[in-house]
Every structure is written in structure tokens, then in C-alpha cells.
Length: 217
Image (tube, rainbow, N blue to C red):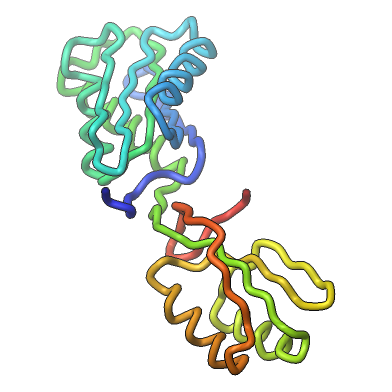
């Protein structure tokens, strides 16, 4: 199974008008098909008076779940174009809904495809594309004698400290990217002459935005 993939950071929303029709694009990161269906239901309930609430989603690191719904628009003019935008951006674990309030002017097949594609794109941009990568949550404990050197190294190397505890020793929980873990471990073992204790607590898939770890759990 592929551990790395692209998704979006958060729920997003953006809108535009096309020949007097209002299009509102919504996006959400999702972890399951039930999650996607709940998001679609939420948007539909918020826009019960809309002419259409079209949707598309892709789920799973291998992108095995792919669904779309034209919600009354001519077949192939809404859901599929939205799904194709997700594929073009190489995203997964994402759900899109594009709501349309008809303005009285028909767009035609080509116009609808362009409008729903644009609705998908603005929704994705509002949600912010992120890289999802494997990280390791580690606990590092050590004597106060090394605290200055270790803290300085953590700041320089930009490691993410999740929590800290100061008792008779210093204990830190940090998130380290899987690809950097061995270098992290060997560096601090050498820095402390082998006295540091490094324990793997769990593995997580975390978001990176423009190379920076985003973590708010």
C-alpha cells in the first residue's frame, strides 16, 4: 500500500457566477465513503433550494473508491468533470460538491462541463492541497546535562515537538518523518554519547503544506 498521497488540508468553499447561474464549490478531506456521503448530505441540506448539488469523491491511497453524481444535470456534464479534476490534481481522500442555482440562461453541454470543472478546482484550491506522508511519533528522554544542545539541534533541524515533560529527566514527544528517522536517531545517540532513550510510540500519516508539517491534534 502506498503510504504517500496528496489530499487537502481542510474543508474549503468558493463561488463564482456563470451566465447568471451561481456555482458554489465545496471540498472536504474524507477518510471513508460514509464520511464522504455525510459531507454530501450536509451540503445538500444546506442548499435544499438549489437547482443541483453535484458531487464526486475518491477515497483510499490506491484510489480504489471513485464515485460521482450529476444530480439531475445532463449525464456526463457535472460529476465526471469534477472527478476528472480530482484525478488531474492526483488527489485522494477528498469529496467535492458543486451547488448550482440556475440563473435562467442555459449553458449547454460544453458550458456545464467547464463550469463544474471550475467549481471543482476552486473548491480544491480553497481546501489547500497537501502532501500526506508517513511520520513516526517518538519519545526522547535524556538528562538535563544535554538539554541545551538537544534543544538547539531541534530548533536548527526544525523537528516538531508535540509535548514536553520536565521531571528528574527531560521527556519530549516529537514527530519525525519516516525517511529521516534513522538519521534523527543516530544523530542524537551520538550527541548524548548513547545516553538518550528513543522510543517509537506510533506511526501516523501527516500533512505537509509546501514542505512544512501541519499538525494540530
